[in-house]
Length: 347
Image: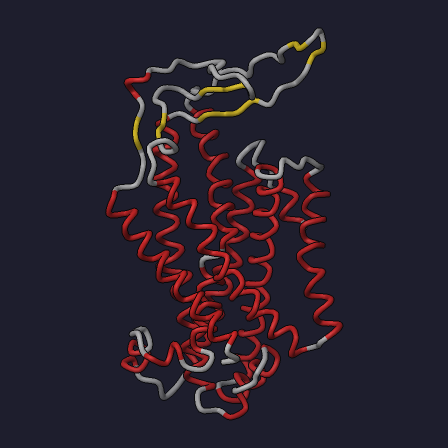
């Protein structure tokens, strides 16, 4: 809750920077824990590790597909799409403010003799969008192909090297996995596993809270004090875990953890389909050139700034980018449908 109090995208970038650096420290802590765990593994060849990256029929056997969907949902969390779109907005404003491209806010309009404060929308400049786009692409690529890939690979490598063909690991939960790692690798491995789990849980909780704040403000148009909103979202998110822990116990927590990740994977196609559609249409991906502008809600014309229709820039995705996105979307959708079918059959 302390770090969440600093985050306020409507003000300076200082709060956003604190939020980003705090999340980076948590992620680096998880990476360091798994680096040490990997160094403790023995009698595992590099060839066996790389063979695990190749597709095989084992992914659709027993719990293979269920676990694959869980990994997908935990890595590409649907709410992280909202978070990424929301965090980039303060960066756009910072770019325009530093270069003097943001016009002064218009005075409130008068309606029927009563002064009414109308909502004003900030429209960033083309230069700010192009600059932030490059930064966002670089951050996304680095996050997915370094940290996310490494951490998920490390989890599978450690589990495969220490728990494979271990009869006690068949029905193991997160508590017994700690004991198995401590006994099969070293006591330090169990401690590092618990620490990595704690850090990743804190990271996921903060990300969910900020994403929930953005959805409540934007889509639901719910306005309340920031600290109260964050307290409510954290309370709502932790309540199911407390109920499950009290009603079912350890086994219920393990099932809820895996099930929540699979649920994220199932939701992913519904969240990404509109994103693919919007980014492939010029109707939604046309950017007006010139300085930043302010527009009052309900007024079709811009309040400040100049607009030249001939200078509009089309920034929709290329056809091959859209085609690749559709193929990936179909793969994810087919995986989830197959997983639901297998679950329905009791497999």
